Image (cartoon, rainbow, N blue to C red; front, side):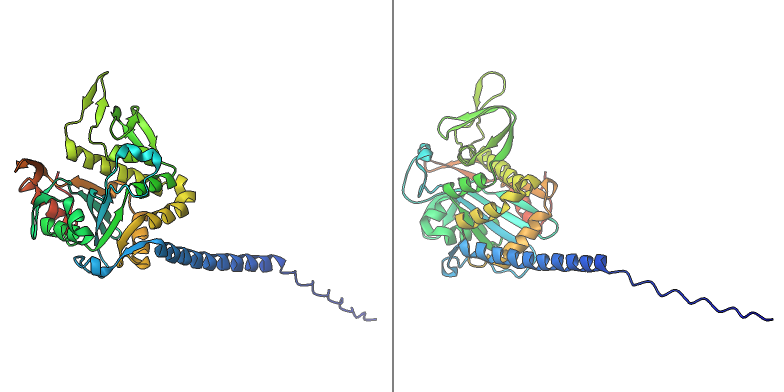
Length: 338
């Protein structure tokens, strides 16, 4: 008798596993994408909002600026000693009407490569059309930002594309928005007139002390137990201005200042005056360039000058051919001569 085996009934297929994990992964990806889009829109909105805070100088009042489409840009950075809105605790800086340019600096940005800072001593001897020989910082008093831009271009041969101006109060607020900036002093330093008083070593300067440092005209150092007066005059001051500007950059670029950046950006916008061409797009480009900068890609120097007296007044005049070599390097974006 033949026995026929009845095939076993196949097991029913196992139920498909629930795709809970995949669904959650998809939700997370979507949430991240949404947050990224919102972050982009928030960043754009913040840039445009910040841009709206900048006090603009009408183009009719800055006719000497040179237009530029992309590529490297030259900025004229001006620090004025205006006493307008100066807090009571800043009274040591004195008072007078009007403004004078205490800082005159050309900045050359090459996207993705670096930046050059060229300080122009405020006592540089210049001639104005229809005005007697004077110091370059008088250009602002005589003809405002436009005459200053025109004079800087005539003297240096550097085309100026943008103009940025900040005063005492604005600069102090900018430093304070970062929580102060650190300067490493080789020796103890003081200036009874400006209010500077620091010990040797790394010192965190607030806004008021930072101004006292960059404006010091009676700078003294104590390296060996006695106070010695710095005899470098205006050249020494420009060196301190460059040191502080680099310190501000270092602090702004440090990870510890990440939470201060919205405050810093807002303060910067609220405290400067700038040309109308410094648009939100240009500001974004500058921000990108700044992110790629570090101490090794920021080059600083001062226009080579020497003391000069004429008509009973003291000036400085350019030293040739050194001054032309520095200016040629700046215009071409080459390293400054040592």
